[in-house]
Image (cartoon, rainbow, N blue to C red; front, side, top):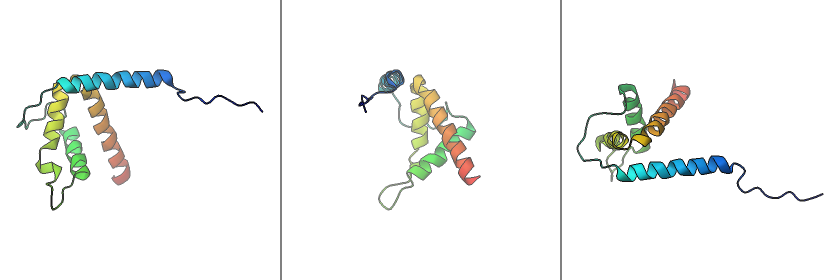
Length: 108
């Protein structure tokens, strides 16, 4: 029985493309200035904004030491960042859509 070589990177082209995309997103995000105090949704439509608010609230519910994310305007910051870093928008919109679909499938 001959030994098969171990393939450490079976999908090298996919990996390289993903790394290039991450580098582009990181550069965009690093150049995005998000001022404090913005409270209007520029990127997320009302349905997606509601899903984002619910997700952030569930992810960071707060406790006796920290406030819940819902009152810290975390979703406003995510929206403002997506507005300031256009290459990030499709990724965030797709993520919110996927989370909303998952929540609907699990909880109706």
